[in-house]
Figure 1 (cartoon, rainbow, N blue to C red):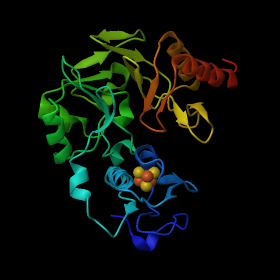
Figure 2: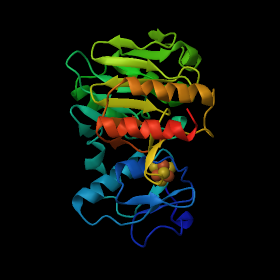
Figure 3: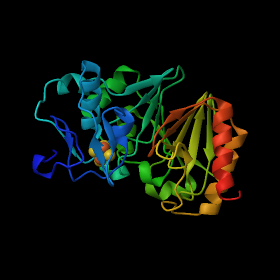
Figure 4: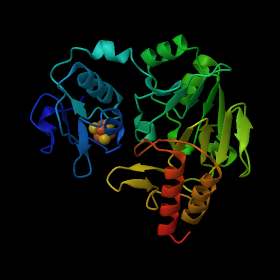
Length: 285
Ligand code: SF4
């Protein structure tokens, strides 16, 4: 739990606060963007919640923080909020929340589908979330974008007898995978397109489902830069391969960018295309 003695000075006065153990993973800013903002290498409470809806979102962020860096003295409402994960995005797509320290707090997702539900990357092991997902019909496939964001996938895979999908180049990180994608050509499973995007890691993949692109650590939206972004600094395999993989996204149409780290965004297809081209142009690509 967060320690009041380590409360960061950037928090506005009031009950909720972020302490010095924050790892700046972005989860709280994604779940409650009006409440949490940027500090110096951390998140900070920039506005205390005033309404019931704001309080609920703030508590969801508190419960989702992978390192317990968000604190409050008032605990009322926590029990109700834990029953509200996963968090609806739209059209049967959800954020799982409850991020894991094992994946540096990466966001994971859940998709309701008539042929069987999907989980994209994994939240931390949590009995309440397990129960809520069971009531939504369980999980048929768990798609792992890459080796860093596996977290507690094995727990959810075992509970629902889900088939786990990973690229063979990252499969060393999940030895029980049922489907190992190879090569760099897209693979279709029903309504879903699995797109190998080497760069951040050798076996990184993104998943396209209708208007939603689940990006892992390939690309995300940066509100500070007001553009789509990818990190050369945190590219573990090959930056030139990552740029090639970003260019590959121009062949596909989507409106939502739903990443592991960084912020999600919804834009029209043409704007997304323009943002991708602008990002590539920065590297003369
Ligand atoms: S979720 Fe927790 S660790 Fe992540 S940015 Fe917010 S306070 Fe920091």
